[in-house]
Image (cartoon, rainbow over all chains, first blue to last red; front, side, top):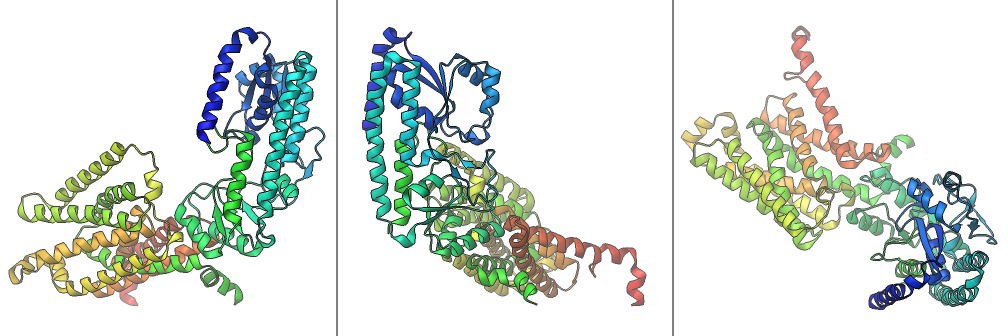
Length: 302
Length: 291
């Protein structure tokens, strides 16, 4: 898997060197607001498009503060891709400050927004719509279609390339969605409840029938108190969840104790808002969904 | 009444991790508090702290060699602690160097060796985080270790009680009547190490010294008799352990520091109002006489 990816990357780099001089002028400079969106744009744009992401891998778009160089990136871009649904609260000011003439493309256009229900004190700085629409692969396909149309509008000469790239990528997403459904289908009905420390899986829940609940009251990375641990255990018992994903609890001994006392499985990290860097578990969107799926399957399918 | 139950007993009846934590700190207090009293009476109150530093590198090396493994970390800590304790005792009894100076040199060397080994390994782990035990996450093995350490401590203490007390009170007399002083002293130092290692699994290295020394100081303010002093120290250690866990449960503060802070509060009360040399007693001795 890793070697294949490396091979692909090497080929891509080689291709870049071969074609770069000829295409240097043609490459369409665009900006995407965060890493997952940037990955979509890269897949559709191929080597006709140079993508820069404002919030890079492992970054948190919720609390991001744009820098002057971000304003410059936006000013130079021909297109600015954003998620919308209130995800990038900082974007409006950035666009104004940079004075960019580039059209803003909202990638979630046409996606039915989901109300943020049961959002207990998880203080995200956006409105009532849940912005994490990419967590459903079906939605990701809408992102890709929007990106394709926007790129064609900005660069009509590349239409064939964009359509071909988008079609190929959509086929991969179709396969990915089938994979998700197959794995989730294996989870017994009584084990489909999960607690996570980040409330970002609402679309995944609606699309694939797993129930996610956010962990309440524990947000600190400092040493957990007896109160925190008791709260986690009470919630697991009360909601009869089958697995809990605790990114915030770093002490492995404590995680084992919680698992022992509740009988719930304690899983690893689920990625929600950002890709990891190349060395991480989720350098691309497809890797991210696959990683999350593996984690869920490991915890839920006995 | 039900609210009283919820405040004082509920947390322990409802949650298994609280029961384990309670068993852990109680066992720890049973062993460590008597040790603390003897340390205090021998003017070795800071030895616990120095020993904790001596143990730390051993435990860290154990961790580096085999991960978060109870036995490796325990063995590493015990070896480092024993070596420092034995060398200290040897040097103090055979050369001009006094006990405190000998201990200072050896624990600093142990610390330096530990840090060097860790840096040579080049791992970038947050050692402090790993080395701070978590009283909320005691598994069966760790509990068993703490409990057996407390048992061993009490038995050995009973065996060497006489020479230990006499040496505390009158070392010169002890030397004229018996040769047991040296072996008893060494056995005592070994017990200090054993209890610090227990404490470091439950509370973390630095707080382990707290559960040893604070109750001893509390006992000093209430009793002149050494037996009573040990009993009061142990009782206040037990109370601090129980109340500290409750504080952590109800107010959401980290458990280890909560236990020590409760002991600290008891200490302040004793310092002010203690029968033996408490500040208020010293300021108003008349009332004592009239009463």
